[in-house]
Image 1 (tube, rainbow, N blue to C red):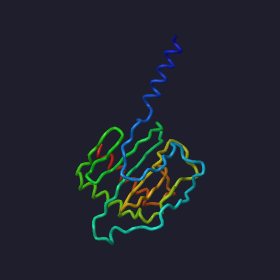
Image 2: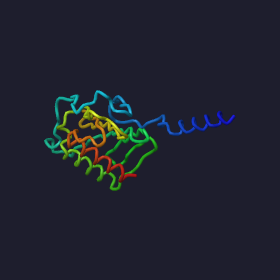
Image 3: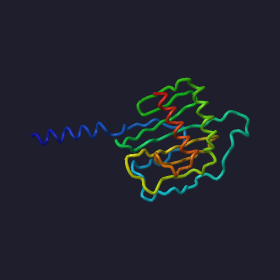
Image 4: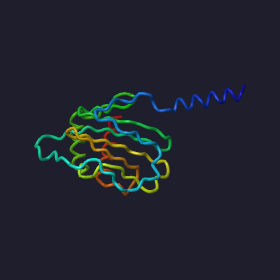
Length: 179
């Protein structure tokens, strides 16, 4: 009887720690979901997915970027999806958060992302040879003028391009401010 009781407790813990069944719908094309563990094939070699890089500065209008960041792994093996909207809303599986400053903060983040020169970085996977030890895997999709740029990297990966690291840091700071 005790064994059955313990099995029930373990089952409840596992179910309670599982990722939610419904994730928010994103305004970007669906992409493959990475596993929580980095691939052993991972090297710091980009896998190009886009061949042209639009320049928002040349159009004269303010850039508008759709941002979807999936963060998975870490010590707890969590998976979280954040969808950032132009009105300052951050949609998560658990509801909506609102960045202080609303649309103005979202525009400032967009300008900061564009200033990193992330759009000059070829989309692809930037993963270290050693994907060891409780780090987050970041799966980032930026959409500008209907064109999606998809990047994957690992937390603390110094071999990833600096614009990619700076963009992810800026997005995470924005999400933290919204919480």
